[in-house]
Image (cartoon, rainbow, N blue to C red; front, side):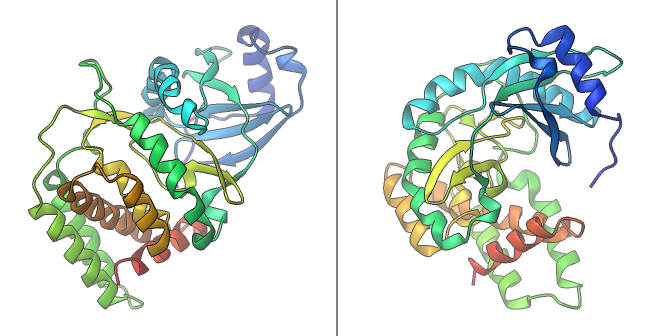
Length: 298
């Protein structure tokens, strides 16, 4: 995990809330505690109803701006499906010595999908399909551009090959399953590319960015990588989150998606699986997810 580029602590957050948190009653006086530290952001629980999200690296700051600008529009599309999107209630600006934008959003009760067994996740397949159908609509010309998400698979072919070689060289390499993932990638490269108008995509859709309570999908979070392009990037969640039963339900519910898009989605799932396996040595939960995902290609 990259090192933080700015110290975030309770005193800083309370100072920011005092000067910018007027939209939240008694914001600076509510209980506050650190929830988790990610690659790009820290999450702090604020009282019972809110969460504060602050970048810990400069590279994440533009992603927060994207959420401030676009999440209200995205939420208007997705929330009627019953899946929550964390619309910013406070669009925080730099201040109190802190250099980047930040956010307060409503808290959603539940657990990250990483902690829920893969078999139970099958019950989310249909509601997640509904949410993605609502999201995957044509985006305006000024949509955020992301050079890595929603792009043609060939753009990432060299990096896929590098990660595959790295994983094959490890003493514990699962050669047969890596071969199967490589086959999925090659098949995706051969599929017809996306040739329609770019549609909104989440851009980082994996179980760590889904919130659920048992068998109920509650929310899709972390839209910092939101962009537009090929929806296959998001549809890779069929392999990243679900077992064969859940994936079948997911695909059936999205019967309007063509076969070439599903082939590309499977390829993107293979690419993300290799990222999880190759770059999660210091994150056991994501390493375990990578191993789970790799098994879906056997």
